[in-house]
Image 1 (tube, rainbow, N blue to C red):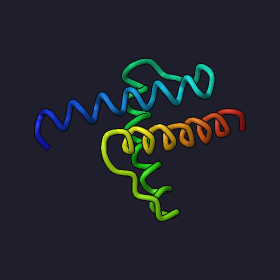
Image 2: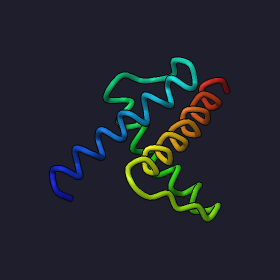
Image 3: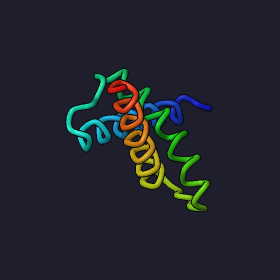
Length: 83
């Protein structure tokens, strides 16, 4: 992975984490936490979309996949925290 791809991955992860935190009303974790949530969310979203047979491509598709994965991740974390 070159430096450009790394920076784009971090930016996409940060944006996806921020969007997920905003959609779930304030469940963000700061900039570093949002990047981590967004990147892990991208993996979760890719797995979930793969199970459904959906393959989103390009920057927008990656952002949507990462955001949906981050939303699922934040929701699961909130369920675990309540228990």
